[in-house]
Image (tube, rainbow, N blue to C red; front, side, top):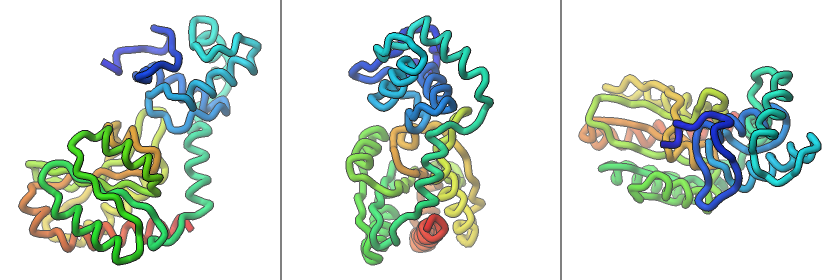
Length: 255
């Protein structure tokens, strides 16, 4: 299991497939607070994390081999003990990208995904976005990681996914782990929940989670868990309108 590893339990280095786990997430978090940019803290040791690790080693006079072994772990722990518990460079840069602004909805690339019986809702949202000029990639792939890879290749500005639930819920999920959260994802999730309040029978909430499609996507992403399916189907026009308003407000506030 990914989550069983603690920082320092094993050598960390770039492999194919990439190493994953809580130890990788802690490495990314510590390096990020030191100013070495690993991107988002996703627990995946990819090329960006490997470069940040080698940069840290070079700055500390260690062998810059990109392998996090005993000496590197000790150095990271020693140096990061003076950094506090700030958000890290990855979160700061995501916030800065949002402050620099997004294009209008008509010039955005948006991925609309769905899992489990909500293809009609996803199609309706995709159609409405296209009518407003957005470039849209609809995804029905059942594998969350495959959806994330496609969204990353598309270079999307945002990912909005729908996940069916057997319970009566409307939860807008964004990516969050103890040491990192997606600033853009949280903002979009909060706006979606806010707009969903106008839909009868829904009591929308927001939750930060480490779900695969949220962890693997590189852009701000929201996964809306909604159910039961009948409710989602019956209220599809209202749901679509609410998500559209949320996206428009999100882009406006980031501009």
